[in-house]
Amino acid sequence: MGVDLRIIFGHNLTSKEIIEFPYSLSKSKELKDVYIEEIQSKIDHDSTIERVLSSLEKEYKWENITENDLLDSWENNENPELVDENGFMAHSLSTYFGLLYFNRRTVEILYLPEHKYANLHYESHRKFIFNFSKAFAKFLGSEKIVYFSDTFETQIIEDWAQEGITIESIIDLAIAKFGKPSEILEKAIENRFIIGDVTNPYLETFKR
Image (cartoon, rainbow, N blue to C red):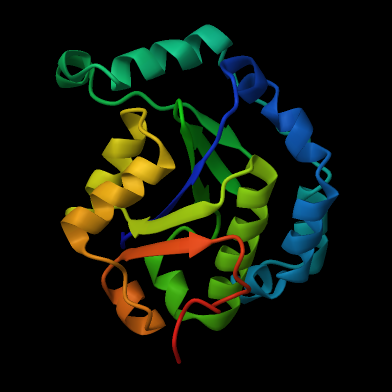
């Protein structure tokens, strides 16, 4: 089965704006340009140029999810007693690059097909993940990005996001628990916790 890669961004969207998000996402030429620029990642995952381009033309929308469903999930996830009773509730939005999960103050990406954490060890996949994530963060107006694995100790980062706290608080909690991520790329990947910054070019924050 393997370990999945999770990526979290901050956002200031209202629940109404989140329900309308598929439309604004479909209109973003900047995101689609980065997606195409990093097409080698898809080809290395046995896709074709034709399939990649056709995915950009598909219509994506929430499936049977209303604004009230979204608000109810946040209310559940931010109440420890309800979480104990129901577990965390999540609604996914399918997009051309993967699945999106919106919490009250953060959004999480599960890339497809680059959803396994091991993708960070391969140049073409890592370039897509880091460069598209930076573009997506800019699209959201989020300066910071948190990359982590969904197993082992770092899984708690996803819990913090679902509990409705901000990306800044998540970073503070993660550093307090796991330490500041290494500036050496290989070590940061090995520790399963990386902080990205939209102001830096690809891998600039990592020492060779």
